[in-house]
Image (cartoon, rainbow, N blue to C red; front, side, top):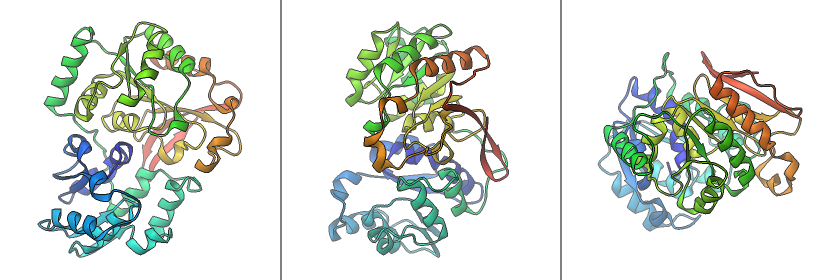
Length: 354
């Protein structure tokens, strides 16, 4: 696994697998702290250094294979579209091998019925109406009747509390987290939207902003709207996990930190629009809320994002009111063109009702 959101969304899969098997995760090195609370063993890999580009090399495949040469697996499941990863996965001795195959990845075609659905979900076409988490769980062949949230490490909580205290937040305070950025630039909401969201949330609880180092300017601009604890660019993965675990509510678009919060069992509010299809990649678990367009044509393909107008973005006052009603346990009536859905885990996976 190479990205935070993908790893966090693999949580239902690893939980199902661990109910009857030992699980080893091969992940990008920076994601290892999260992976360690999801699996029995973690093999961290510097994927950026080893892969380098879009085409696999003999050296990169050999390096990855060497790292895994001592792994004794009954089943290998490849969830990564990169050709080098697919080629490496095919060389690991195993009784069963599932997921993306090297030749099929190169030619951008599905290897089986499940990878066909994954192509539909992950390629930007969004033609599959099922959750990515549920599709991945089909690989396991089993689900846990009672899906238990991930538990942060004690070290993660200690580091989170230390950072919050250093930034002036009272120990034990329950706060709302706003994830102001996103991995894809086309998903980042305007400063005005997050500013109004911060003002609304601050009426009920302290507000903590999080994001990456590249989003520091965005965090600073949002912080000018009201009194917040601005942690944008100040957290690593382990500290981030601890902060999310201490929150009373986490708000964000379809991005990695939102999925980590959901995996930790923290209530979330997802703001989905454009290519972000909540039925495919909404926060997984029961009791999460998303606001999204309820019009034909949503979600749009990734390739059409550049053509979205400002009017396609959720209205700032609607986002602010949704957060306020969630914190105050009030009902919310979305404006025309938007809908609000609540999640529930059923026998066949996640279900959304409005």
